[in-house]
Image (cartoon, rainbow, N blue to C red):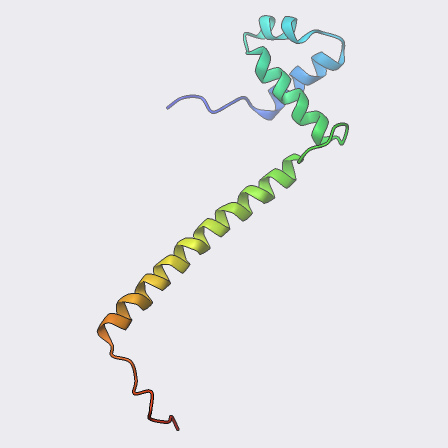
Length: 101
């Protein structure tokens, strides 16, 4: 199983180095990480702090959770519709001329 990203504490230290005046290239080289990762972390941090427009981390997580829930509900709806379709094939419709009580 591979590594799944860097811990938040590490990212925070990298961002602190940038704020202290170090360049992305220097930090990336010294720590052996991708410069693109650092740029991504910096952009995310700026969005979270409200310095640039975009969805912050909390909003992104809420959106992802909502999308997951929608997908679950759509699957349940499809299963229900399919079940109704199968029941209609087996159970004959009630006589339309007869009134219900």
